[in-house]
Length: 359
Image 1 (tube, rainbow, N blue to C red):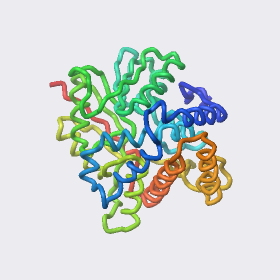
Image 2: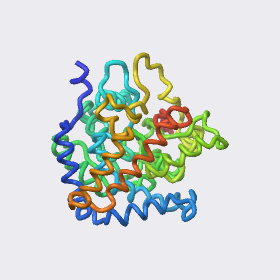
Image 3: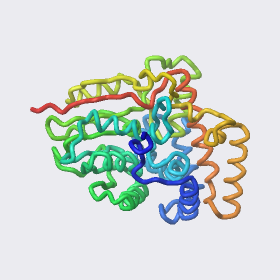
Image 4: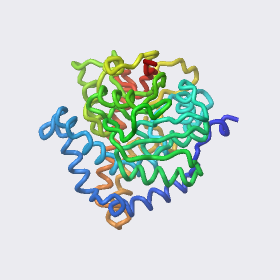
């Protein structure tokens, strides 16, 4: 059955995720050596155009990304799961089945073998890494800039008894690997954090063996996007603010950057537009609904109750001061993503498949 084929490497019940979230929140500041109330204010300042423009955000991308994931990682794992990405949901699929299938598709396109060593470029806490690792039994190394994600991800790899999977703290613009280390590489909705795609793609090319493939789902503006359409511009800004991005770029930028650094671009398409009869768009799960427990939080009543609960948790000392502000930051992202998805001005799954030349 599909539930067995598309299972998660580490399964968590709803109660288990809530327990993990409350435990993580209560220890968040000590574990990460941060002060949430100060960090969220500093993060918001980075996205205040009167204080920091897109070029400055690009120059400070490491600070931007690190601040964002220090604040957002526990919320993501609690609310979304261990794989921090979207997927179109096919007819009859559950949410988690669609997420796993989205990952396995990349492994299939890479033609992964047990003997391969793969790079997960921008791995978060390693949900895709573990799912693909269990599916293929390949060796997989994931990199993320954020130390907290590395620690959490490696703990989950250990829990799953996936000894051939590991996370390493590294900047994907300056990877600590020798040339031609990996057979293949993939990235899932991560390269959008780079201020210049050429820098990260060039590093991926360097660490790939000749003939190795790179496959990625990219966050991009589409041909529908118009810089003179206020709604499109507003959606773009909300997505950037709520997702730790310096500046969203167009799909053509990805294509050009891959070619410029030396990749052979084999395929590029917006996977959000793939035929999906009877299924759901990737953004449907973010839309308000009183008939879905998960989507209830996006309704007016759900938003109001979540705000009260988090403020109460802050007052009781169960959550760090500033947690409600973090949730509001993520809510702004939700609003922008839904707007961009409905208008087709944005996609989180621009699919690219590229190959490093043999010589």
